[in-house]
Image 1: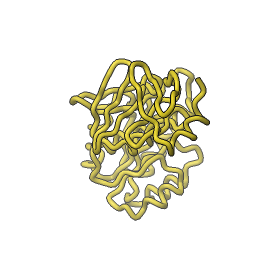
Image 2: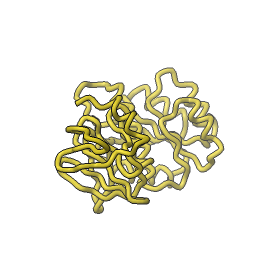
Image 3: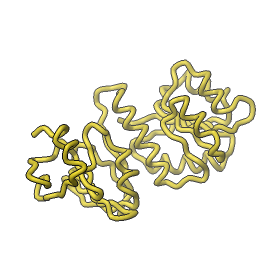
Image 4: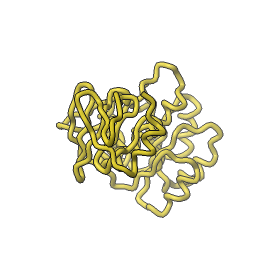
Length: 229
């Protein structure tokens, strides 16, 4: 599924950053950029927008007030230089909140959250659920179903899939938040598994393909209730 995006920000440099980031993600298509709420209203009335990257501090109507005015809003990712607006933003069910300046990796996390929500409520049945990761100077779109497990190593994780073994600069806790909770769970401080890919559970270990992974005692009971061979 290609998600249609709209940028609403009165600062040209901020719009340029978002345009550059969006251009690097194959699953995103930028349909327009607006300087204020009035321009955004026109664009939303004439286009099908899935994700709205919305600045909070704009002249005239603020991003918060504009979001409140929408009766049928796309998924909203707020952007601002002021973190004190975060609580108010999330009260509006914002998908994420990016504090300027933000990295491409942080942007990707917001996009992954938005794509997951779009998959939960797809506009068409051809949607393919996947997570975007940057590794080896490349951007990978990994279908959730093909991810076997994750191994955490400090500030890095190793992602094992049917095709790849990727090393990503992220924590296992942060990356887990980008995955569907019903399919993935932590079984050890260093391992997250795709429950659908577990072949069997034996003692304090699980088998996934050619890999045998440890299960911590404090995670075993939860695993037993969720694992259905």
